[in-house]
Length: 194
Figure 1 (cartoon, rainbow, N blue to C red):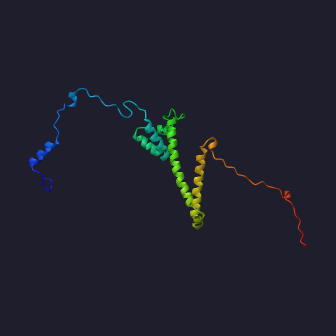
Figure 2 (spheres, one colour):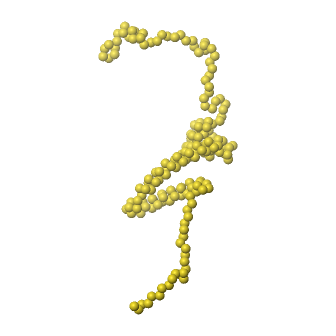
């Protein structure tokens, strides 16, 4: 054998005989008998129902990334915009819009909670990085922007708390000091003469 891998015709045939298995004569499929198709995948012929995994995917896309992204995804699969709205609410169709499916609703809630937990971790880290020392050294415009952002965060947290029910709602109790009349205090008369 040469360095470039060029071999003589005799060596090539010898190696070819070692490598190639004997040829098995096969009949073409139409001569072997009846060809039966494999089980259908996906919806199946004539089935217009959207698979559960696709409903979950479209609902999640709507809840997390917005309706437009969900509509774009749905159009790729031939799913109607009204169905996208239903999936985002946890319903399997527009007919069951008022009665969402528990499995789909639970899935969407778990995805929202996962995103919320991640956002809260980032929020806590960013809030911890804003110290009084840092606030004292920044410009008024930057302090105003931070205050505005904190206001938005506060409002978003309030909206999230509105979704909680019963005893899960946070309760704030503010105690105001009692106002006492001047007459209730003890009076001490002090003279100027010592």
